[in-house]
Length: 164
Image (tube, rainbow, N blue to C red; front, side, top):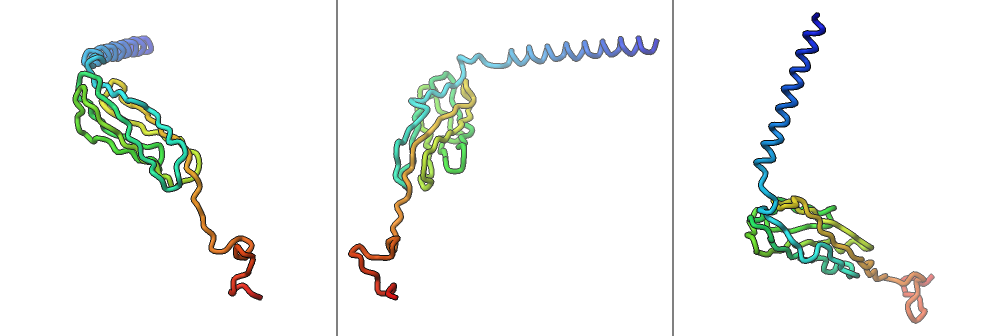
């Protein structure tokens, strides 16, 4: 008898919770604005290839974008994939529909070799996270030797300090 009462109570409790979940999902859908009325960030390009860059050279590129949506666009964050990639963005400044702006990305070119880095942009856009990329090759640093590897001058003579 106690088992039957317990089972009936348990089923009734689950029914109440299941019904409450359906209502909250329906309410959430009703309060979400239609995606056509949101801000929309459209980039001219979402990847930039620097090609080959000199060691310590200019590793900065400006990604141009436009708000093609119907609401003001607010960028809340932009984060590089590592500490060598630093984005600069219009912080908490609304970009009106139809207006353009830039996100400047700077790569530390004192790191020789191939690189591919990303920046993740968070905003109130229809697509809340957008990823843009940079790539290229940084040439190795030029190292000047105080003495040639063989210890001799270009004319073949040994510096005075080196006579034995």
